[in-house]
Amino acid sequence: MTSEIRGLRPDELQAHNELVFISYSHGRRLDPDSALDRMLSQPDWWIKGVRRSSTYQPEQTRVMVIDGRLVCSVTCHPRPSYIAGQLVNAVCIGSVCTHPSYRHQGLLRQVLAEAVDWMKSQNVLWSFLYGNQDVYGGSGWRHLTSWSLCVDMPLREGFGAQIVARLASTEADTTTLMSIYQQFNGNLTGPTVRDESYWRDRVLHPGEEHGYTLLERQGAPIGYFAGADATIAELGWTAYPHDVLAFLLRQWPCQRVSIPLCNSSILEVLKAISAIPGQREHHERPAGVTLQDTSRGLWHYHQDPEGLFPEFADTQGLLQFLREHDYVMWSADRT
Image (tube, rainbow, N blue to C red):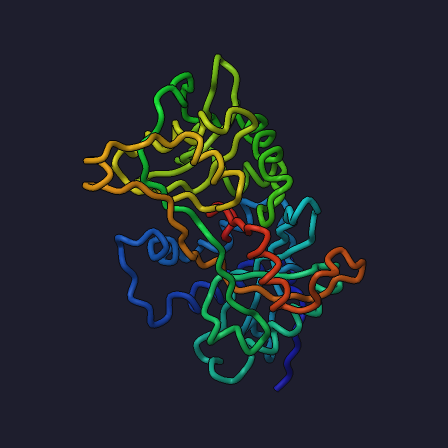
């Protein structure tokens, strides 16, 4: 038996697509009401995804080959990120799989170790993934949570009244969304750096519902959001934060609205736009802003040869740093 771990070759895309499909569908009872399961039921879901990406390169997928057969793989998706005012080379790991006939032999751990070496050669500082720490913990990945907000409070009159909302257009508004996104996220910790190809390949899919709504004031764009059912998946603004947040909270009156980030600036805005409830209203339905500990995946520190972050030198230090700096991950960047 001969085996090797290496980057996927361009002529192996279809073979790898078959490996991913059988690995994810084997022994799984697919729920037709689940969007994830509906995707996994399509034999070509992996290859359609990489073909839609203008930046994917086969070598990002690290594979184990035994006797000429692909049996195990890990794909490393570059996710350059804003971290406390700096740009960092990070990676999101996905499409981790092992052929059912080769499981329980420790092969995945070997491929993950090689993937870490490869990421280091690409100057990647750390990586993250979404999975079970019982599976990935032995290879160095550790669970991170950070604070989100749940908001249920009366609002002062006037804030947000001049905002007009409209569904963003993939063709006409991508540049505007990019500009707002960069200005809002540039000094945060965690958001992915999105260029135009990323927006078009991964966020605003032409011909599909994307859920991004532009917010305008006096005809000029000042912000945007994506969300439904009192859950805000992403938001940003360049001006009038009090109006933007008040407008968003009024989209779901008398409901607890979930906001996937928490920092001192947002808390100050929420205090400023909140109304003082009447005595009876207070007793019957107390208002409040509560913290919710939200899972942000598994993380692994790799290296920092340039000393960009002297505050930490291992994975646990990285997690503490991210949490203390109000780490945020928008749902569109989770894969």
